[in-house]
Image 1 (cartoon, rainbow, N blue to C red):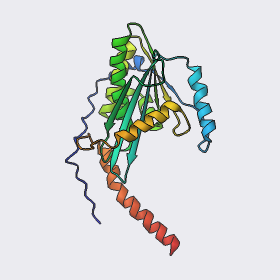
Image 2 (spheres, rainbow, N blue to C red):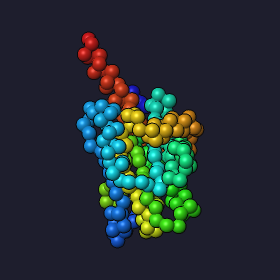
Image 3 (tube, rainbow, N blue to C red):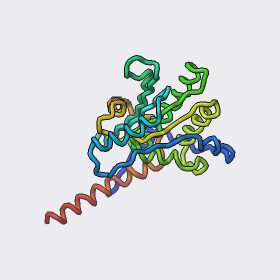
Image 4 (tube, one colour):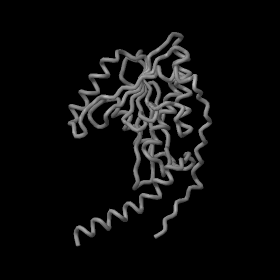
Length: 240
């Protein structure tokens, strides 16, 4: 059986440009990464408590960026959202919300990268416009794969968006700002994570045409029908 996908409505993602050099790694090491530890089958309360323990130990942040994505294979749609919070606001509402379609073929990892890119660019601009002194910035996401991709040595990056994120991070670090990344477990009652999830679901309804496509997205999409066929055959063998 042959399957066909129309990729003409998607722009190709630009190639990596290798703009980070060996001497930049000293500044890269100043970006911190934090991950709460809990068992894979831990309850919502345990996961939330593990997150709160690390979150409270880090102290107060001037800015917090929370990102999330929503993907649906049935709808062939993906959305990403980035919510920027500022410590001076009197309510727990974001000062900026960025929503974007991630494309019909997008994996959750790529959508998270796009959400982080938009959010970091927004944070960079907001920091420079609102504060003349160094600030502390938290970036929270429930994508462990995205966090790990950023944690690796920047010289080993494989895609343009991750490189673009690091370019923005280096710009903040060199201006004296500090950045902490933190993995946030999803769907366990963390308010800002839930808010980002709601916005990502709204973003999923945006037009998907024109979203950049990565080659890994196309390969993943190509495998899906064969994987579903294999699952059906396996299920049929068990019930025969």
